[in-house]
Image 1 (spheres, helix red, strand yellow):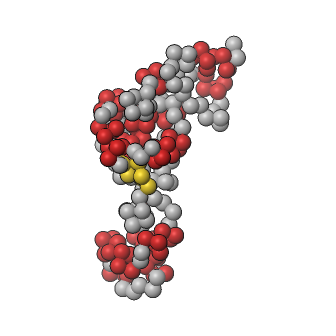
Image 2 (cartoon, helix red, strand yellow):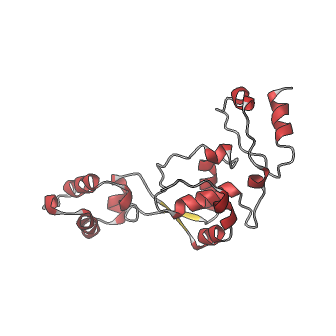
Image 3 (tube, helix red, strand yellow):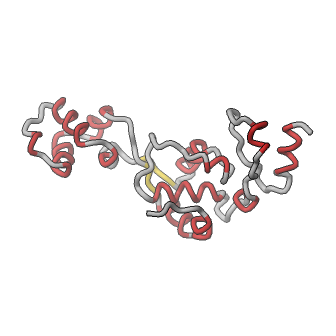
Length: 179
């Protein structure tokens, strides 16, 4: 049986067909294939998939940025293309991209000092992280700060928070790291 036929058979009962990256070595994967669970490919009330809820959950921690790598589990367990689904969550108003000022917690104090230094601000050696943030807000506008660094955080909108709150069962089934 061809690879395409095997995939078609594997996912014939799924409401939504899982995403499979063009880079995936299908022959090797099919030897030990664990199909994306059917429950992860059923649209929820909002039209979202379980993988979208997991993306919202990750954004909720406040550490998911434009440079955060997408875990393989988005594709292999949730059947979604993480970056493409994040773009859709942005477009549909579940998530927004933070401003440069809102994203300051994603850059180092050294980077903040270098920005201030470039702007001619002095007395930086005595400043702590909070002082650096204040100095940046005092000396720069959003437009002036934005070009200095590219990383931006993602944050939930009210719509995104509501979708996340509506589906605790998805989060409950997701494996958690032991802290």
